[in-house]
Image 1: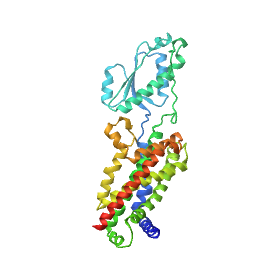
Image 2: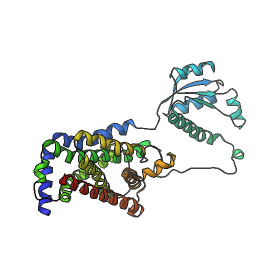
Image 3: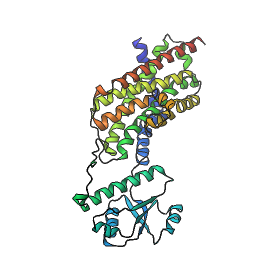
Image 4: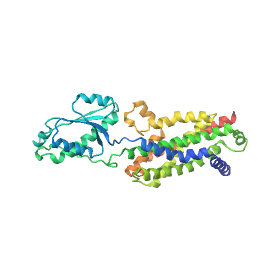
Length: 369
């Protein structure tokens, strides 16, 4: 049995080595995807274009504007003379928001009284509007702290301390999840084409007439991709740490070992699809629809799972990407150990084993046919 599996593995390695497209998909495509999406998917805002309506025109208001623009988050794109210009600038997208400093702002500060400023934001992009408002609020708290009189301090104050990502960099949140989604896409795609390719090329008949069991065929097809995908995972992790400066606070060895469990589950999906598909095109479509798109939308990669409808929250438990994103982010950002992930690890192993068993049963049916 072992000899036959090894022979099939060697055959698969030879095919991969000769197939330049498979090598590009396996090694070059993940790095290009994480480079592209790692920079493209970014929730941070820099040089947010705003208009300025300074109705106070005092040294206090000018000092506020100067410190605001030096923060690199906001950039004064237009200076307004009255409120009638606000809607015109927002409609033409010349600015994304307008900062209004009311009359009497400087006098109110001198009297140590509260003075409000207003930010009118274009809400057509709700996420950007929310982030811009949060940035301005944080800036105002930091700016006004040295100006406050001790007697004006509230009885209860909140001083938040942010752990694991103190700078609130969206890259630290996006890249670990992105690497998992990319691995799911690559592993599912490659193995979904493996058996379907044998059928299209006509070599499946040669395998079927040989004294080899369906389980041996499945193992021989999966094992080479586990080794290659593990190398792929290591390169993606290194790429994330070196290029995007994502911290790796936990054990790199533990992350690689648990990556094998995820790769095993992802490859099992591809094998099940491939065992049922009659052509490579059908296998690619099935891989995209069944697990790759849900991995983007139902895994917590971008959108929190708690915000999904209850039915989709239940369905998301069946997506391996959801479980490994928790593992990846937990080890990289929080430095957690295995005791936090045994449930997710057990699911990945059981999920992969179940799909492989279904693949073997389906392959037996094909043999009989």
